[in-house]
Image (cartoon, rainbow, N blue to C red; front, side, top):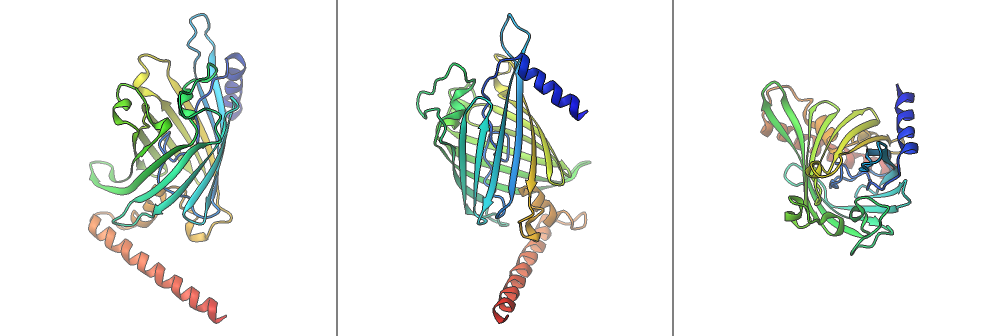
Length: 304
């Protein structure tokens, strides 16, 4: 099965023309999350996008691939590097201003498309589809909060990640819907079943959605891009595979591959029927106990 999938992707790339498709590891599909990975946690991603070539004389498919590496640094920052199949290379950096608590969200600032060869103003390249999404030095502010939707019929408690932010350059568009937001973006990510997430977002250009499944350190995601324009353009479909390296991460942070998983580990182990207020109280007690334990570790270290 795996060999068949790889063969199909290679055949699409050989028979079709190669077009650019903007890619990076943002936490959602194209909307950056305010979450920052733990110190020295790394994530490697491989992405494939394919869609009809939009040529009335041809039945071939266009295809593009990309790879990315993201690394968490010092518990408050993250840096990433992206290389795409159309010779567009860039970096991204993100710094967390405020970490998420019971009452406060994650708040981060970042810069995307660093070192990109596509100018920030009047981007143009006949060989690149959606070239505006590569505009260099795109700055943004992202705010994210994880909440627990409780008591849903036949589903129960559902962890939900909300993101709202604003940015320059690639986040601005003249699209019918997205163009009205003037650089504002947002995303909703829910986990109706353990390790399975549904993502819906507006990235400043258009509507996107994704279905992600995680198994231990592995994750795969099916993405539908530019839904708003599917009546005027051929659909774009993406398939992303990723792996998290956590060998150098502190043991208590190894399961924090995503904000939803961290939230899930802290709250959903509590018995069913517990109110959200009680869950929050239990979480506060855990946080206090962890702080006290850390203080004891420091005292023991200095005594040694």
